[in-house]
Length: 300
Image (cartoon, rainbow, N blue to C red; front, side, top):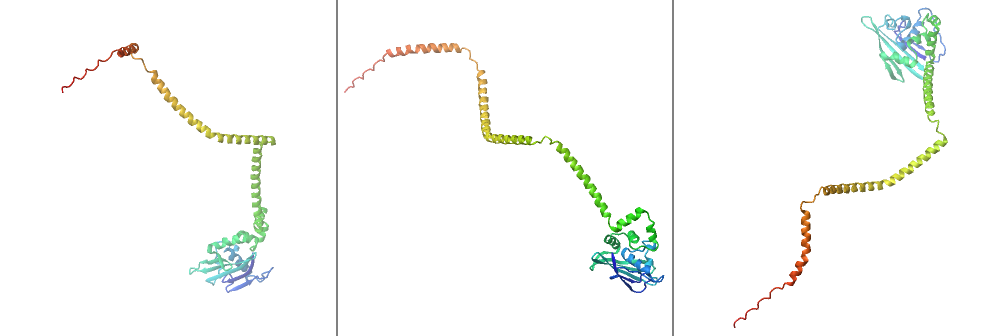
């Protein structure tokens, strides 16, 4: 983040509109007697970005931001992040009861409002990649806090510098890389275990398997060719089975037949009658029928 222009009106000791121009300033120093407003300029930058000032010792307190005799104040900061320029502004209002509140806070980029009111501080944190605590400990150190940073624990300084330099992402990359490595190792072990089951997959075994596949394919073709014959044979078998069933029924009925009583006597009589029939026919042939009587002469 690089400050470009700071505009103050009714903020802290700046009761009248004032502007601090940082354009083209690679290095600068705020010089002046005590009470001239040097710290207020720094406070205004922090307040414009995060809505609070560290030396107030209370992030919710904003009463000290407004000049004692002012009822309205404005802080407006133009700053660059990489090649983009942003503007953040906060307006202060004093009520009739003397209570000071922030109104009409907004973050803009290219004239478009990116965030407003309660969303501005969070949007600034995402834009700068620094929370309020990290910003006031690493970028703008309040009076007396530089020594506190130097005397903080090594881990606290390390965490602060990691966040400041944005190298926490490399920790995340390393964590993900280790997770991917573990997953890849697990997959490799599983594949190796599966490959052990194919230890007998030699070229000879592959050739034998190919020969078996070819034989099975030929057998399948033969089965396909024989299927119509089998269907026809199955129909003939069914028809023959029906005929056998019919004949079996007739056989059973014939087995139940019995010769009636006296059939032998009738058979003998029939034979005797058949034997006498020629004699009867010859006798009948020798008998002549009487001639008819002549018609009597009719009287004339």
